[in-house]
Amino acid sequence: MTNGGENLSAARRFAAGLREFYVAPYRRTFARAQRDEDDLFMMIVLAEMLGVPNPASYYTVELLPVMYDRFHDWHRRMGMDHSPLDHFSCC
Image 1 (cartoon, one colour):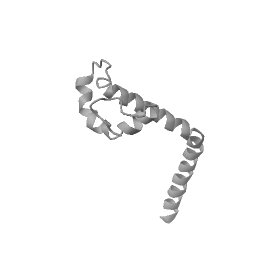
Image 2: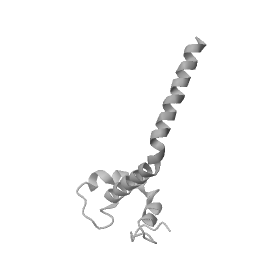
Image 3: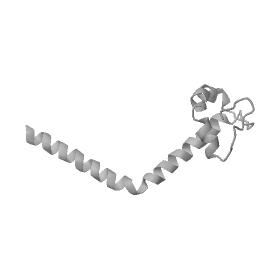
Image 4: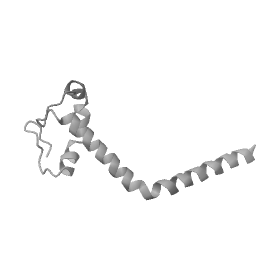
């Protein structure tokens, strides 16, 4: 029984090593793509507050409390020193 368990463990370690071998060169690219996707999502959710008409604002209003936690990092990353929203100041 231990031999089967050791083989399974070795196979999992080998699979993890192969995954790391494939993912390692692209880790930065994957992280940047994820950040760009998150920024676009933030822009869609906050579009109405930024003065851009958003036909889906009825559905995105529920996400605003979740987005407020990440708002400061987002507007700093977008190159805005201060919050672009008149009624919401985070810094």
